[in-house]
Length: 120
Image 1 (tube, rainbow, N blue to C red):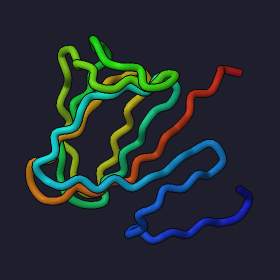
Image 2: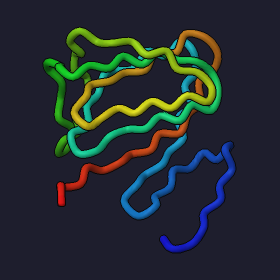
Image 3: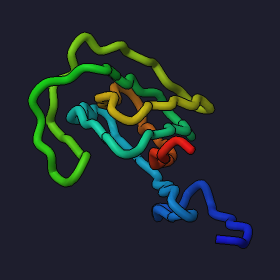
Image 4: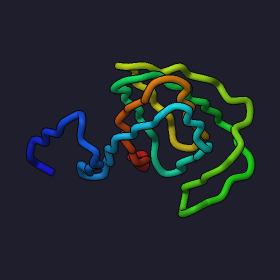
């Protein structure tokens, strides 16, 4: 894409810019997601509103590979909890298991999928 792109923060759509995918995620309380791992891309969470707890760990067990490099329903070993709120950014490197939990009001964030690139 060689043109500017403008979208509303209220957009329900995801969009792609070259090899980046950006989507909006709206989670209602009491959401307790399943852990997942992406082996071929990192996630960047950009919190628009609300609060959530994100559990992240380098090591995980079990899980189901639903497609190449996409693992769902795994168990995070010794997770570290990150509390995120409006205006926070959270970078989750490829290969780290993660899950989101929302206990209070609606939680809204953009999720940017950043593909791994081979070293030059």
